[in-house]
Image (tube, rainbow over all chains, first blue to last red; front, side, top):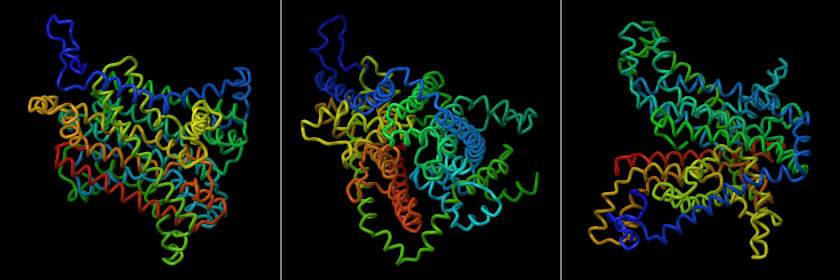
Length: 296
Length: 285
């Protein structure tokens, strides 16, 4: 009630006559709410609605035909494969980084944390470019890779590398503040009772951080499946082979095959909605076990 | 005690918790392999160009225009996001209205929705024959396929950065401060302008910087709506892609290097704002 803006002096129904000094006038409140809602509608709700409407433009029949296209299938499979490799890799990295940074005091810790955040301030296109410069045919490694028949660019390894680069900080970023907050006393208790290091990790630390970990994995996965810029640069856009779902959306759209483009986009939009719902549930039920870092 | 942990003994404070060597080892190797080596490859390649070549490539008119468009539209979008992001955060923190929880969750949509999907959806909406575009066309406003379209896409992408940076700080505001201001005779507008906003300014600045930084590098949501006319509505990341497709690696490298330097400078500024605000207000933004 405190945030309601109107006071209710005991028994008096005349609430609007007495206004709480720490809230805005009723009209101002309505105005602000209206402005916020309009903004949300224009920039968030309508785009989402447009995806589903455009996909269904020619009815559900065509929608399903498009989705059962073998190229779409290949794109879905590749997206799942890439996320299936990139997310676990960054999960292991995130736990290791959080363990080192949150449980110990050492020199250069702040600098290390900054380095982990680095991919967030690099344009996705540049994230792809660095791998082209590293593995391309004109690079130092290029000729050697070619002579050994190793294909990294325009193939799955390149897409995985670019995805790992882009999603690098997600899990670590979620775990570091959480584990810092939890301190080391639980682990010290377990160790003093005779548990080994790994036992302590599995039975004490992991249960403490599991919801925060899941939260990080959720965000990491959403980005891994949806990454466009970085993957676009390294993929080579070979249809049915190196097209992930977002790239397939682009290709179909640029061919003016809008219904198909939006049909594939629906799947990604559904992924986003599921991510948001799970994220909100985690925030609601386990807010204490998810680090106070609601920004990303 | 293995030799490895013993050698690390000097750089860290003693602790009974095991696994420092392993955890730091994994972290540093992964960081080096995935981030540091590829990025230093870019730095090395751009320094190998030589200063004259680099300068020529970086000051090419098309490159300069693309950089100007990227930074200009990102700046404008971040400004719009500051205004509406602060209003949205305020409404979510202070007021009660139906559907509030859904809207709060929706704010994160730009984090979760793949940028390519956002791009085609916004283009469809704001194209001259789209739901919103058809309403704007009679007014003479063109959004899609103009620089304004880029701004709109970047507003979408940057919105959660401002809201999620400002929101937690607003939740922490002590109501007593506002009560004190009101008791001392300030009207509501004065309280907001002179008491609340100054305390929020570090968070707002950080949110602005994060949204701006993200907008500068954004690619997926922009390329569909921008129209991509060279010199007019072509963003820097797209120009990198075009140069790559032309196998003009030196030009791509030079543009990327310029963007990286500016981005890192901004990262530094964000960190400085946060350090300053911790000193000044006792909390990080």
